[in-house]
Image 1 (cartoon, rainbow, N blue to C red):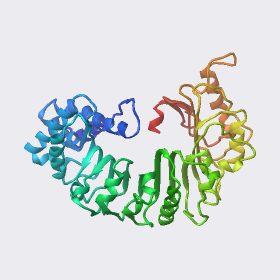
Image 2 (tube, rainbow, N blue to C red):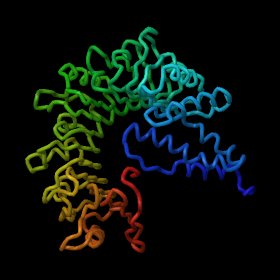
Image 3 (cartoon, rainbow, N blue to C red):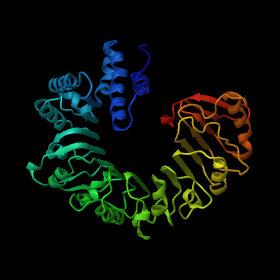
Length: 442
């Protein structure tokens, strides 16, 4: 073992650290749990011997991850604060701070954690949820590359400030604490920002998206999210934001209660002329994509909406053919794959997720229309796409599709028919091989 260089051991330990753990939540909480799991994966190695402890130390302390809703959350926060206070050299190893605070964790402990975070000089990724936050703390981390403030309330007593983050590439501000945010910050200057993710409430005049001072030539993606009823004043704010961010390539609208464009909303024809990717509901597609070079489309279906010959532009809404299409939460109908193949023959990737788990399984995937560029395809329900019946078993149906796919998908390399595994094509000699991999790892 002594003959193996430490650099090799470090690479091995990183593989152990990044072994994915299965978690039962998604989104920001999933990421927090994954960060906690990465440290837990390495901890047994660090306790093996002194040599392994020395090698693992940077992996153990590169991420501070605390979830106050878990048992032991306050104790973990207290322990981290104690260790970093006693061993100041460990602070230089911390590059990521991910904290989900809760009411069970007292104010005195948070004050101490703020002091710890303020003393970290190498942080590039910071995510704070569920607490009050001193704006001075953010000012002490000008080299951040990623910043998430969710359910965070900046302290307006400190007075309005201007903070510059010259390296920040991703910024997300959640809905809570908006009034405090716009009172506490005169401006957040982010000249290198590539992705801006904000709640729709920032689009109103009272709150003001104007605090985000980005460079339109650099910003590539905007994500607007909201669970609230869309306010008419947000129409103007959205249009003005998109005019400011005129060069973006990607727009995502996660708006559950946004009114339909038929209610009167119109996006000016000259707004976001370079848009290449759009994610949103079916009833918003044409309003935001029409006439724009959209090549990547991810659509979430609304109830009672289906693809028909009367609305073919839904799957070719822009001025160029689609290359990537993801239809989420849709109803499967006879002829669906034929419809897509006929209107989108230039697709490189296609993903379809059904609305009702198992409700439309066994849908035919063979088509008379060729898709000569398709390389990746996924057809998903909560279980197998196919089911055992008088026409054959799941295995027989999958084998039959794989054998016939070369006729209409001649370039296909990856095919997924189940969330837990995919089929990948090796070559003429190796054929199709089943690979165990969860859908979220694609």
